[in-house]
Length: 498
Image (cartoon, rainbow, N blue to C red; front, side):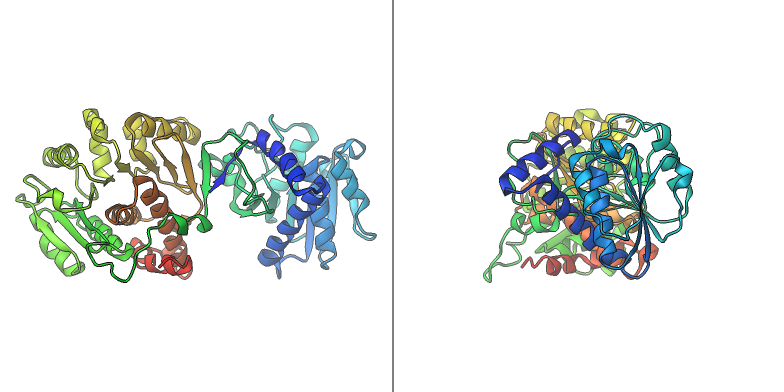
């Protein structure tokens, strides 16, 4: 997994990598520009004939100059504007000025009004990771002018004005796309910055196998290439018992769909046997909608209740979807937490019950919790921003030796040792009812197959997000939770996981 570094450490990383590779900083800049251009041509190959590039005079501006040269040589119509004192620019910026071919327009401006916004795309290369204060003066005017245009904006590494690690102070470029190098900077992961970062794409500049041990960070970024090695390997003598027996407890009158989705997702993820424990009103709906699962029925008609089936017969348990927060539901959760020592995933109303009954936190060691943002704040209290949520999720996981899966656009998996893993898969089209129930089934299935809570959670969120991406290709806003679970098998094919 890729370690995520602070903006300050990015500069140290560049220096260390340059020395390791035996190349110059200018050659590394050329590599980054080439990777950006590859992405740009693929994304805008027919739409962008005329491109406006706005450069600062630091290394981000140097990236912009190199990008302009490479696009110009590919017959794009390029106009480059520089903002700031060109004579005081960084060394690599100056070198790239001298490398510009004849005929490529380069204009140093003294006022934002000099930028003629006549093009199909704007490339923003004004500031990079080094900015640590609000922009002002002419730079602020340039940013305002860009934001007032209706032209798509692609930012290089970071939208100009956005700090690498902290919350935005002041204004920043509102990019439609951000192409960031090697790994996303932390600020690109914050929902507060969604209007500025746009669609984020990560392009590798060859640092994938570089030794990051000299850099301190407990924040990691998981990508498709990381997932196969986390999976267990099964063989031709494996049988349904080898693939685990998973029990999902939940459901109430009118909310039986949550359990059905979770059970089906567990089956699609490879569970050998899946059972659900539901109130009596759920017997017929579940048997008719998911014939592959076995149903254990509670005595109560409309809510889950004691007594439960013998939980020791199962290799993993999931609890919470559609369960409600009644007194009966509380007693069920308490009984399962206190009596079952195996792996468990808690979602939805199980988390709401944990918030209402904090003494149950004592039973969370080794468990996986999958709250969305509102459920999480019920559990730990209100948070001012997402950075605070991430900090509290880490603290909670460490305090109770559990795994916290904080769901969102970039789901964050907090582990008991303080490590946090940010997921790279997923799409906003997954923001639909029942999507979280599917994730519960996926993680529960992996737990039942013998995965550790950490690996089950990391694999689970990645497969879930990738399934959402695949399902939404042809459905977009019409994507529903059932589409996501039906796409789960394709995720194994996509990553060649047997």
